[in-house]
Image 1 (cartoon, rainbow, N blue to C red):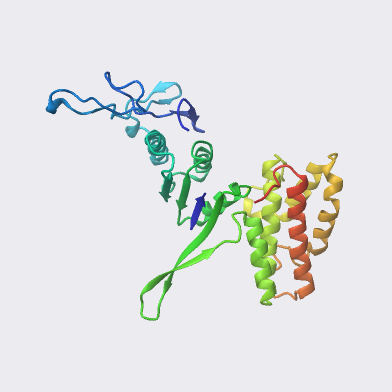
Image 2: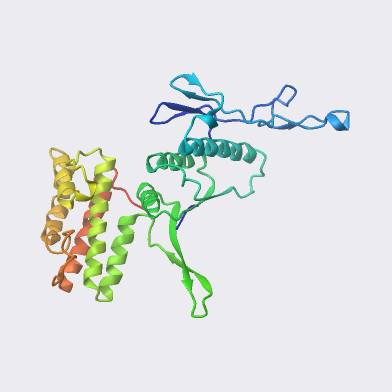
Length: 316
């Protein structure tokens, strides 16, 4: 799976366990040029003394305000991975300072986030967005959960695209790549498009599933980006679209947007029990073409209303 998009000094990144990672630069040794981005050739008179000064990378890592002179003996794999990424990103920024204006700025990250837990992966996207906005970024991953999480986070961005790459097996046993572009980086728009494709081929149950997924993701996005409180469940798998829709309606109470959203919310309720029920697809159910198409249209209209009237509902 691929995500692709068409700086780090002076900041401190604090983790959720009290670690502080200061931004990393190449520290110039005495004698390095003051205008150098960090590394400079000393041009010594004697050949055996000629060298590049400022080649060392000196991370400053603290834990609860205490220095960690040997972080590799204390930090876990996730923290060490974050440290390595910080050094790499700083190095790419420094090296880019010497590039020509028309030199492509390309960075390919092939599953480099695999050592980070999910909560520490989104900050990497934020760093890329803030410090590498003018770069072409390619993220490659085998992790479906991370792929969908990244799409959810980047749904509002028009400068990112996604596609899926699979291995196909020929009758001869040879493998070949199968490229499957997604309709949109926004998973809501993409699932609505897939629902319409299944509907056109008369696979109504499959179409209804994708309509439900789009409905759920649209509600989650609005709740997450507007800090709308949702009913707590210990097992998040038991969180239903009812919980989300009720939360959105409560969150809109007293707001001017409530009237603008009223029709879209009322229309979606007409199809919820039949098509958008998460448990309606585990057993055979009679779905008519009219019901499925109506549900897809209602989900699309709701998403469009969120995009037009609710903060955080914007989409690419």
